[in-house]
Image (cartoon, rainbow, N blue to C red):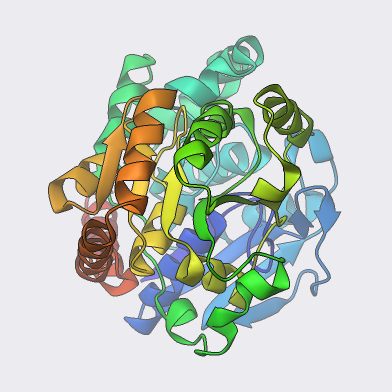
Length: 394
């Protein structure tokens, strides 16, 4: 079986999309199970260019990756990638597209249909209510003129959770078949960290050893719910003076300025909140290991990969019901799921900080959940079955 995976950005990119790592974890696991996977992508990482070979095969954990240069940024279009698709789509058994609203979904769908190849589209949350509400008019026009046909003609649309599917259907978008498979986590990244490196995070960022870290890890963006988290933390620190809020992630669309306004409005001290920027590698794993509770008070989140990472690190999690993985958290007692409420967020975080036995129990439950449900091998087995069924029915 030969699978062509088309995605706008790929490793080693870090900034461009939350779908990058789960996509690679899947592709790596597929290769380990004997599936040939080729990735067509571009040399972009947000607004930056990746220093990678162009138009040549690059082996990443057995996955054959081809990077093509960007030609037209607004649509993330690459003429060279376009040429490659026109020449080689016919040589694959199935095309898997991880993108919407960009050139690769339209080009991938066009050439798949031209050569009578089945294709799957993975929107990764981009067609949920909240993302569609942002710049709604432009997106609705694009859907009407271009994307709707790509989606309608796809052999299947992939969702990571049931909620994503429900919101897709409510948006009036059609599909032939549904695939619901969650993201997987490559636990090797977390198992390779050394004991020493996991104890240096507080020291590196000037946090006292006795502080209790409330961790937010993700883009600094409106959709992530920092307008709820900052005032909630202002109440938390009144009752738990040793609490410190760590905001770990890149500034998206200058939203950090808004966050600083929230901080000023509730009279928080700058020493009570630590901005780390994006954390990668050992720094990222270390902050998980040294934190006391993980929070994600998002308005909308199709899955919540960082929640899975936190759970594997034995961190109890507090998330809103709008995070796609919320039902699994409730079912497995791996954390606390709340409404979008400052009061509920405050109470949930304090409940965990003030009850170490509860925190430990939740952390252990979360790690078991990740090991049993979100390993790349199990995720790959589900995908192989879907791929085979779709190819067989062409």
